[in-house]
Length: 312
Image 1: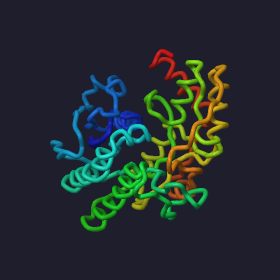
Image 2: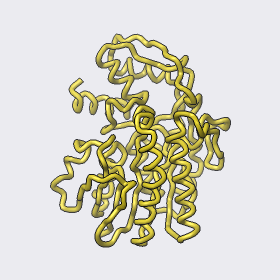
Image 3: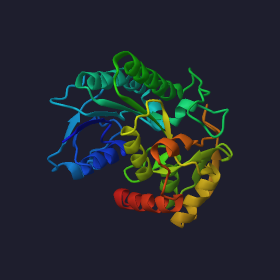
């Protein structure tokens, strides 16, 4: 039986990843300090003999008994409200936390997997974004605490690969949604759904012409699993290339919920990306992966989850 350590394992993505590893017959050690993760995301695993939870901040030393085959580093605040509220913690988990997780992988001879982000591309001048694009990031802006933490984490991961021979993999994750998202996450989808179901005005920042590309969480987890078991060392985009403006997306959510909410506009946050669309040519070629869940289906599943989980 193989063993996986998943940092941030009680979070939206981490908990779904715990499920996948257990389904594949692995033992899972889930680490989370619960600053943004939630115990409710993993409570269904409490009686699973192959699952263990440790409340831990990963920028403290990570000590895991026995053999470890995979170290999946998913710990980090991921939404703008979360990382803007915890700027220093975000930088520490991306730097010290990444070094600790890499140190564990090195000590155990484990494969290391970094959850990086499309935010490495910043406010891109290349569209769609390919993995060889170096990005357009403001290193001292408010979003830099997340963007630069992830860029540093990628650099540290490659350094451990080159210097110590650690088997490493890096995924650049594009906007993902689905069950176990926090309703107070602060990103577009949960905000829109929450406001629409409550009959409140739906808030769109800027004029709504900025674009995003949303992928359902099941598609992401499948892409991660394939990348983990591939031979690809360099960053790989995993995302849905179907691009939509945030204004049109807000209208989709309002229609889906049957709400009478009106759309209101507020000032665009500083350094908010104007466009976001992954080029997934590489993932198709080396992983045989592309998204399968269309947005209408994924939104319906997510809406049902929010209604049940948060009693909306």
